[in-house]
Length: 244
Image (cartoon, rainbow, N blue to C red):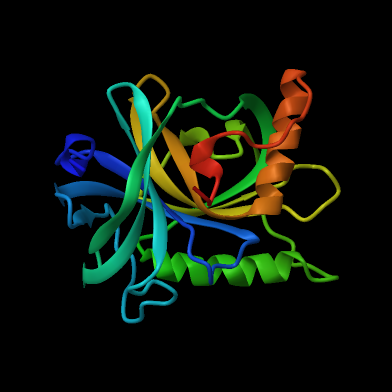
């Protein structure tokens, strides 16, 4: 199998945790760039540190669904983490055959909602710890009152776009009140693109959710479907499914 034909040097790949021991209530993922690929290994480099000091739940033997785009089609393969080369580099072993599918974007909508955006130069592991703490607090009988500000955003179950006046940072914590009389949704988000709006002095930033409760993904999908006036039929995007 010529994996390098589909996973080229410099190409972006999205890794989704599909390990048997994962918490199946959580969508857990991250992005990396292909450094090298052959039939025996895939080397990836991430735009941010995956860990600092401790490895948390990232360890050799974990399995991931690796998705990317080649020749206009979605490509996915199961792969096993074999080695952590550095906080930003890892080695995977491809498992089995490649799968090809037609990529479809998850439905998204422009909407105004209360939101809290907390960017910080920390590792993914540090953000995952903070995310778990916030999720626990938000679901307490007497949750803390967070200072959320109503903003115009573009939202989907997979991510969010909004204007940002500061300097964009790779990782952030995002809390969104979906106004459905339930606790706000909380996610670790990674910056996937940005552009400057010089006229208004802001950055427009697109973020992908890399750590989020699946229940919150479903809530967001239902809200978007209601907003754009289509019948809710669940999340269909393969990029949001943590199974092959």
